[in-house]
Image 1 (cartoon, rainbow, N blue to C red):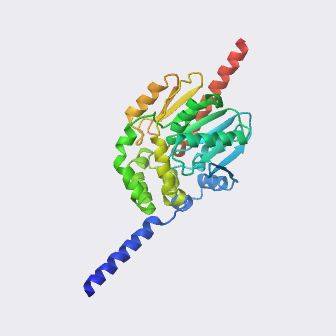
Image 2 (image 1 turned 90 degrees about the vertical axis):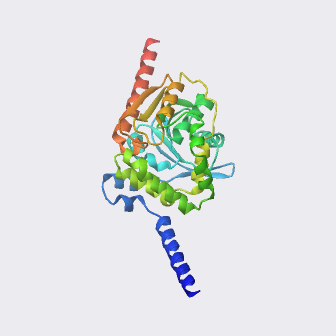
Image 3 (image 1 turned 120 degrees about the vertical axis):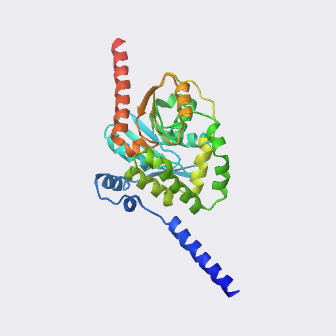
Length: 313
C-alpha cells in the first residue's frame, strides 16, 4: 500500500509540474528575447488605447487610429488579435484611418458582421478597405457578399472559399478541442507551430514569439473554438465584380492547401493574384515589407484607375 501511495504521489507531482510548464503565460518580449526595432514598435503599439462596444451582450475591443479620407478595416485569423497587424498599421496610419478588431467568442459570421457594421456606423465610416487573412479573409468574403455597399476594395489573404473540406478534415479534432482542458488545447496549438507554420515562414522569430504568446494566454479556448465555427460557417457568395479585389497567397501555405487556393481564385476570377514565394501562412507577420508593398501597390493602382476614369469623363 505504501508503495502504491508513493507511486501515486510521484505521478501526481509529475502531472502538476507538466501542467505548470504547459499552462505558463508567456509574453512576446520574453520569447523574442531582443530589444530591437521590432519589439520596441510592438511595445509602443500596445500602449495605444482601445475602444469597446457591446452588441448582443458580447463585448468587442478594437483599435481606432490614423488619419486620412479612406478607412482600412483589418480582420485577423483564428489565432490572431487586433495587434497582429501592427506592422501594417504603423506603415499605413499616416495616410489612412484604421480600425482593427479582436474577435470575442462569437461562433457565426452573421453576428460577427452585424457587430463590425455597428462599429463602422459608430465611427461614422461609410465604405472601408477590408484586409483579412485566413479566417479574416473568409470573413472579408462574407462582408463583401452581404454588405457590398460598404466595401471600397478588399484583400483576401491566405484564405479559402466556402467549402466542406476543412470541416471534414477536422471533425475528430473538433471533439477533442471541445472536451480537452484549455491548457491542453493551447499546448497542442503551440506544438503545431513547430510542425508546419514556423518552418514554412523560415522559422521567423517574430512569428514564433507572437503566436506562442497567443497560445500561452493571449487567447482563450472559447475564442479559438468559436473562431473555428466561423471558419466552417458556409454562405452563398454573391457576385461583386465591380469591387476591386486582390488575393494574396503563399506558394507554401501549410494551412490552406493548393486545392482550396485554386478554388478561391476560380471563385473570384476578377481578382488580382499576388503569390509570395515561401511566405507561409502569416506573410504579413514574417515578411511585412513584402506584404506592405503589395497592399500599397494595390491601393495606388486603384487610385490611378479611378483618376483616369474621372479624367475620361
